[in-house]
Amino acid sequence: MKDPLAKLPGYALRRASVTMMDALSEGLKDLDLKFTESTALVLIGANPGIRQADLVEMLAIQRPNMVPLVARLEMHGWVERAAVDGRSFGLTLTPAGEALLNRVWVVVNDLEQRLISHVRTDQVEIFHKTLTAIWQNW
Image (tube, rainbow, N blue to C red; front, side, top):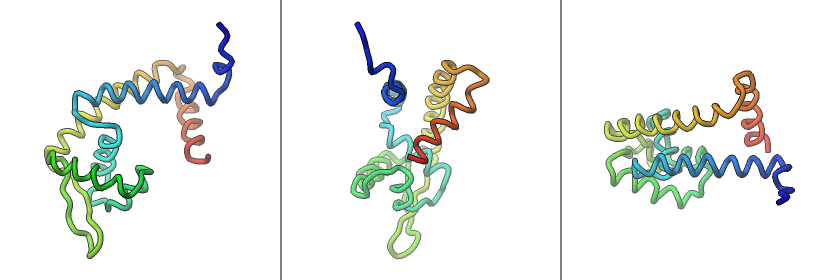
């Protein structure tokens, strides 16, 4: 059967993205996390005290979606909020959140290694630069 879509780089990129997201979702399922929650934990861990508004921008999500996201992270005891100024809250990982983040990194690093295993060693850097250029410069 002919598949004219297979010749399109955009289609291949989409299929690769879906494959990666499915594998990541499967890995995070054991941690009771969704992709956005795990990404939030990574960003909060790297930026203790990050304001929710900055996290919204970094995650590229709608502001109203941040409320239930942070509420769930707080409910599980992974994140705590502290007032930064009169209007903003900063987010920091709790010790339980840091432990969970370590487990997230195990899942992510395993998946990254699986991805890179499909790329020739001498092309890994250009592969990464190309993908980064697409999403940062579109």
